[in-house]
Length: 244
Image (cartoon, rainbow, N blue to C red):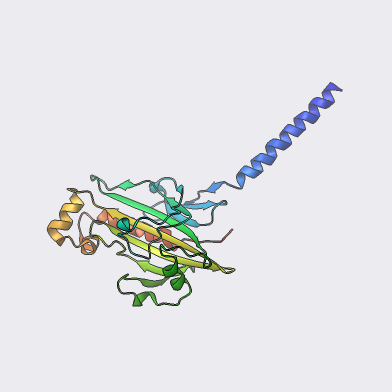
């Protein structure tokens, strides 16, 4: 009798372990290597969250951060109005320093569900008009927006000079997904922040008179920045989204 009870308890324990192993797989992050001529990419997919994309393996692990729920104070709104300042989640990477420099690259993707019935005062109205195509992005000259449709089918706006200050360079998208009266915004961004006295900062000031755009395009010390831009563009082009 004791032997039978032991067998039953063993089978029950195995069943419980199997159940939880199946449940844990639902939240598994899938990282699959992808061949590339110069850069090794991996694919990112997490069943708990919606975005899917590829990114260079050298960037490290994807860090999921909870977004900002409150609009920043007016004094810190130095970025353009198309930048998501209130959002739900951010899929980011650790800051990456350029070789031989303290200058940094920041990359991430912000995700936000816009509720047309409950607009905040931190850009919702602006994004709603763009999402519903009530305004033409190119007509908003002060924002320097361009319409864009990615290979994945996502569409929205693209802005390569989203910072109002000349202290950083920001390339970002605002991609809109409309599903069953719900509006989602995905905002991939890459930010280059030159460290004071760095090789990048010196060349930009001495050779390009502080012209950030010209420096990024032609600067000798901007070669690694341009590489990051190419990798960031490839990541953005691969972006897919399906609401849960």
